[in-house]
Image (cartoon, rainbow, N blue to C red; front, side, top):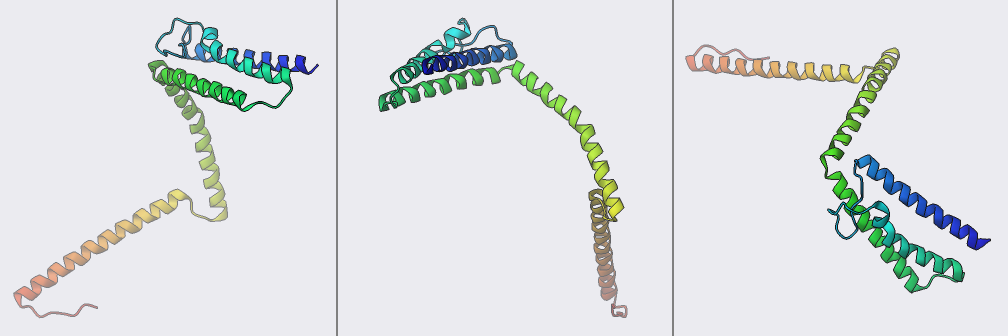
Length: 183
């Protein structure tokens, strides 16, 4: 019974890998996947692309499942090598796919769609927050920013008036007119 369950799990995993590969290929608009050894070569079918990795992994898992003993260090080294090759192959495939104009256009459309959907939601949330703050008598962010802007403008005008007043006082001192004290 354990062998049958193990085989079912193994078959399910193989099917998921193959279906995932096909889904990526459909999404990227490619008819076939590159080979693990030469990414630019698109003449190979997806199953042939993953077959060396899957065969190695299947052999290792079959050995573990049939023996019923804990995995040996050699088997674990083979499994690590299998995973390293798997990651390297996916990295090459994804790097190649993400470097295409098609991928950039798809990402642009995805981002544009997200922004189109989220903009009205953001606006509604901001209006709700402003209404809640007004109900509590608390200024909104926009009101605080506007107030800070006005305070900065008033400070600039005061600085400009102080500069003008100093220039006038200097002229009066230079002309010898009697000086009045500032309060």
